[in-house]
Image 1 (spheres, rainbow, N blue to C red):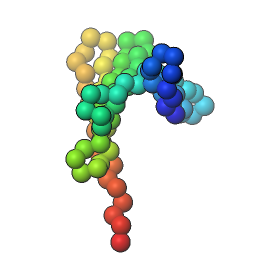
Image 2 (image 1 turned 45 degrees about the vertical axis):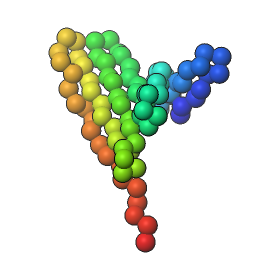
Image 3 (image 1 turned 90 degrees about the vertical axis):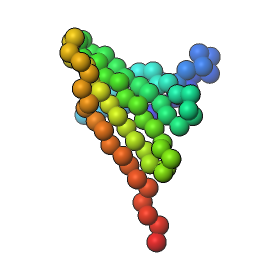
Image 4 (image 1 turned 90 degrees about the horizontal axis):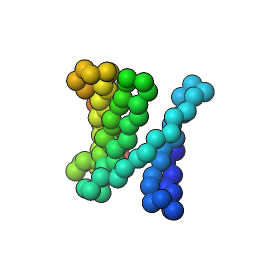
Length: 85
């Protein structure tokens, strides 16, 4: 669930999984077709970029960083619109 705080002018996202939830900031990117979000938990952090590409496909690329190790790809996916018959 993404909400907008009028007073602060910021977006927030709350995600739910298996009875737990997480709340984090969401940032719209300058291209008008992308947003980023991430979170940290101890020495683990994530960064996700979600984007609508020129084909109208929804793409997501998420990296995870553990400690001082370099970021590694966690998720890389593309969601295509269903074809109409």
